Image 1: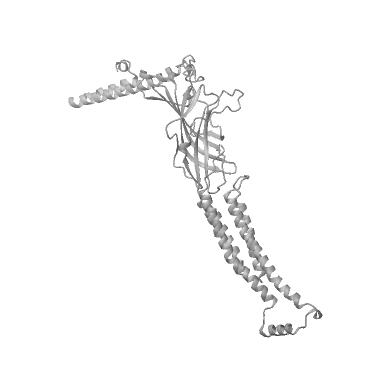
Image 2: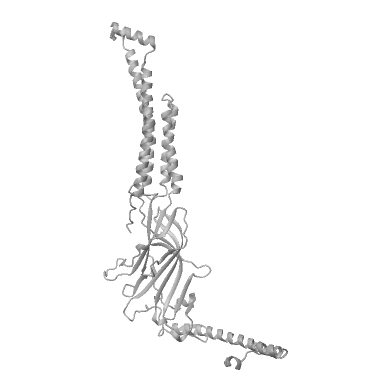
Length: 454
């Protein structure tokens, strides 16, 4: 305190003179309180100035910085070298603890098998060279972006990453804290597009398990080892997607995914860790847009069973229309999917619905053939030459009786057979479709989800 009062500045002299004049005009009691309040403010200001100087001095001491005559900082490599791992001289690996907060998952693309998200990546490690212990009362030191480059940072990368960027609005979104015991906390905000080997056998009732893999690009396990920080190192921050529900698969975290990335030295392994995000597809959209319309198209094809078989244009138009509509809908449903070699649930559904409407069209062809066949057979019998027809008395009596009572002709026999086929189809087609629905939904609800090859 004496140091600040011995060499006052011009502003301090003016403030002090103003305070003296004000104090002289007060009563003795108020004068004492005013002087005590004034000196308290001066002491507090001096303490804050001393603390800010201590913060800067501590950083300069840790990083080996000293201010030159031009006002810039120079670095003494003998005190701290940011190009060397913290425990390099001790011949033990530096353990880097990782936590991830998934802020948003904004895209899942099946055709390219990838998903995109925004994350906060937090890494924590211990660097004994940055201990400042009792030299300062500050619990931690905060570094800006310029000072971060002077501290060693692990060269973390994502092996399954396709695109990535660090957010830089309004400044690069990075944070670094130095603690008394030498612990360094480093946080970065990233946008990532990661590959995910999706298994679409149960699409659209599928569940995808997509990996998040982190590894060191240049340091082997002799220098750097990655660890997950805590029992729940990956968290979701209320992620909402229109077609997926997301959750973290807590029981699938691994710290043993060692890779050598094609190095000739098989003993040189690079440490990596991996976690998994589970994406549960919401079926509601597909029920409304795919399953219900296809069911209605199949039911529409059954209307031809109630139309008279003599109405050829009506039944042919209805059958062809349902087949073409089903084909178009099937192509649209598979447009957003990759061309995989295995059969998907949506393929089974669309193919079966197409078979139903196609068989309904073939059924009319069969009905038409039956009707025309019976009529044609009777007309052949009538068109036989007179000399080839038997002239027995029984045939003459039969012909006379049929003509008298309007007995069955060839056309009426064909109509009866055609109507019998239509009536049978009215029950067989719906029953078969109901059985197919029961088998389809029960099977794809109970069959386990295939595991990803990755």
